Amino acid sequence: MQLINQLNKVRMKDNDEIICNCLQVTRGEIIDAIKTKGLTLIDEVSDETEAGTGCSSCHDDIEAILKEIND
Ligand code: FES
Image 1 (cartoon, rainbow, N blue to C red):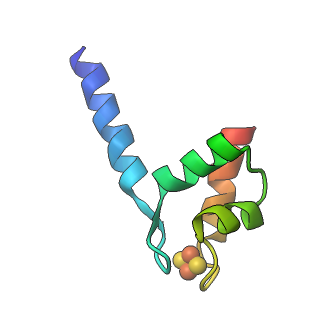
Image 2: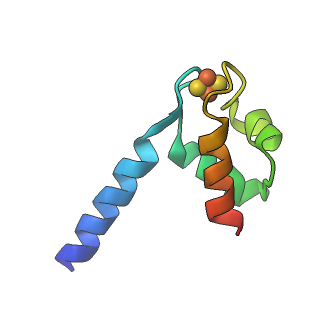
């Protein structure tokens, strides 16, 4: 039980991580958008969350999250 609580804390902390600094979009927001809308492309994530619409330096991270969820 304690291990599950620790894992949930790590997971929550991860979800609070800012992936797109320009637009202050968190990993959790990106994951939610991908899962609820069935997104497969960075442009779709950008349309839904605005992540990746600034300097573009977060595109690799968004791509990695897309891959992690959709593969
Ligand atoms: S960090 Fe995401 S667009 Fe700049």
